Image (cartoon, rainbow, N blue to C red; front, side):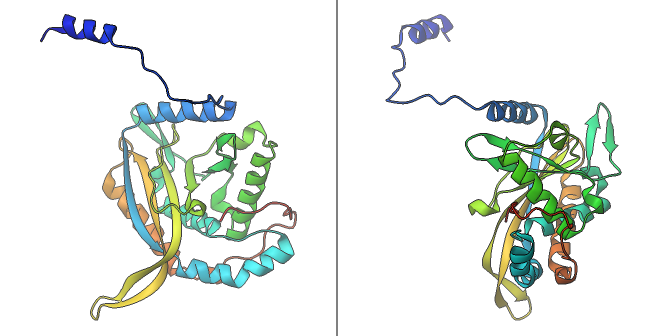
Length: 268
């Protein structure tokens, strides 16, 4: 192959002419998060697994408590805090997802500090941290997320609000997303994506083929393949989906802390 001829042809080709356009300066937040995600994507050998989850029990609990939460606490109750609570339970059983890599060692954390991705319109993505999520009830998780999301959008987060997460959850469900594949937030080793929950027909009796319409959502966990393998991830997701479907959530919601601000709204 005559590489000299090829290089000469490229050099002599006309310059690319851009169609009419405008330039948008990226916000500092978008630049920082983009650079970090690019580094994570380049460093981590990503893999992802998705399972279906039945949110019938969660939807029933929301229906029972939503109006009271709205009127008494000024909070909109959605499925996210239930997922966070179930994720904490899954991380207790599968602790190697609540970890970071350090050379040849996997550092497995005893506490769960959940990073929860928050979209800040026109600025970018920020991931504030729910501290000690493994000690919180569904109500306390709902309040914590509402508080952090509200402060993220009002630019009032403190520096220590966005560091120290051991595992991250991102909720793209409110955008109607059917499925997604997130990027692991290095140095963590896994991230869970909650997609849209919507009514879908499912088989409820395999013997008869009976169908029923249930609120179904896809859960995707992307992970660092150096930390654990696909079987471990799949087992964790199955545990998570079973917890969501089989837990009697109506008895576990409770009330948020007395100091819950009425101005913050939880992401559905």
